[in-house]
Each structure stands twice: as C-alpha cells, then as structure tokens.
Length: 305
Image (cartoon, rainbow, N blue to C red; front, side):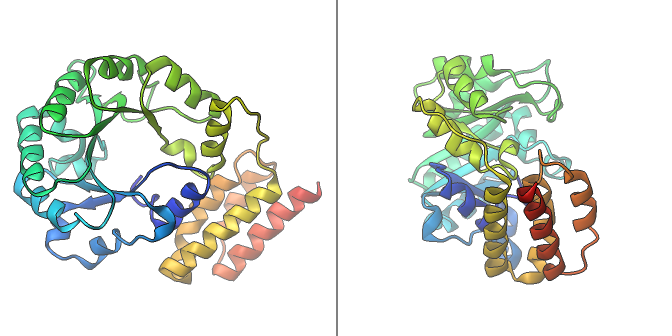
C-alpha cells in the first residue's frame, strides 16, 4: 500500500467508517536519518484518528530508535513484517524477516524497551509454501508483548497470486490470546462478512479491495448489521473522487495531485461503461485542470445515460 495510503486516502477511508487506518510504510532507517520525505509520511490530522504508524526495517536498534521517535505521532505502532516487494525484501525487511524468527523476537524486544503504547505487527504465512511459520511468529509476537497481529495468509513467494488461505487466520486465532486481524481477498461486502464467519477474527484489514472503493467499508458495516445497501452511483463516485482530489491538492499541491490522482481516478471509474477509454484519456492529460475536466465529463455523461 506504499504510495497509496497517504493522508488524503486515509481521510476518505475514515469518512466511510474505517475503525483504524495505517500510514504508508515508513522506513526506520530513513526516519532516524531525518529524511524530509520520510518525515512527511507521518503527516496526520484529527479527521483520521486513531492512526497507526507503520514502520519497516531489519535492525532491532534502528527500529527501536524509530519507534521512540514516532511514539507520539499516532495512536499505535505497527511493524510491517509481511511486505513482499523486492526492494523491501532485499533490505532484509518486510517478509524477509519471516526467514529469521529470532531476529523478529529481537526487534520486538528492542521496541518494547522504548515504546509502551499499543503495538501491532503484520505478517504473511511464511517465506514460501514449503515453510509456513505464521504460528511460530504469532506466538513470538504474543510473548514479546504485541497487542494484535494481522495475518495475510499468502507466502512471500506467492505474492498476490492465487487465493489467500483463510483457514490459516482461523488457526492463528485459535492459538493466540491477542486479537487477530484478517487480511486478503476482501473485494465485496460479502467477502468481509465471510471472513469474519470463517475465521472468527477480531477485525479485517482492507487493502487492494479499497482502491477507488471506500464504499466497501460502509457496505461491510451495513451487511454485518443486517442492513441492505445500494452500490454507489456514478454521481456519488464523481463527488467522492473530486473530494479526494481536493484533499490531495491541499496536502501535496496541484502538481503532485495531478500525477498521483490519475491512478485513483482509474480505480473510481471501474465498472462504468467507457472506463477503459477514460483511463487512456486521463493519462494523456497535460495538467490538473484538464484532468478535472475529463473526469467531470466522463462521470457526468455516465449520469446522463
């Protein structure tokens, strides 16, 4: 979710009922070196409270320093031990840590010496399908004082291919006394409800399913409450997309909003007739004004139809 879950995105998700949002992954190394770009990832506002600060790294002492620095930046701290991205894995962080349970224990021990607030971790099922060790890592996390754990039940080598194995979330929930959050393949409200029922997990984490679809959160909440819901109209999508763009402009300026909002607009357009042509057109836009005009035209024509 790096490059996606910035402050504007989180504010949109929070407005649709997300109980907890996490920052983009923040490099512990970058943070202690006072990198300006890294510091910007910690920007927050009252709209998104409570915010979880998500750190990644492989060195226990560096992570403990970063944890101390971010102690007051959010309501809780999360250590990402599941990211499968090659750049992160090559540095020894993310899901690379799943190959070294003793290092995971050392990291959590070091962090707990300096950080007394709520602490969560996110993991995958293991490095590859031949060596699932999520149960071992879960027990280590609990023993080291972690308050909750999120499991995305795919191996690192699996990436995002195939299906996530929700049975593993259920196994971990039965084995631990701390809350277990489930993640993986939640694209519809029905998926969210099924995960709760299948795994008995304490919460679910929305990832790629939320791209351009913050309604997913409110729909899951409605379905859990036994209520019905209607899919968003093109008019509703346009309203939220333009609000998202406005928040992006306010936070990062028009040029960065122009560059980054194009991918979000492509996601907002999914499922609407002509979305493919719209994606092609907006990537040819020369500036923010043209991007907004193209977006208005596409969604307004859809409303008229």
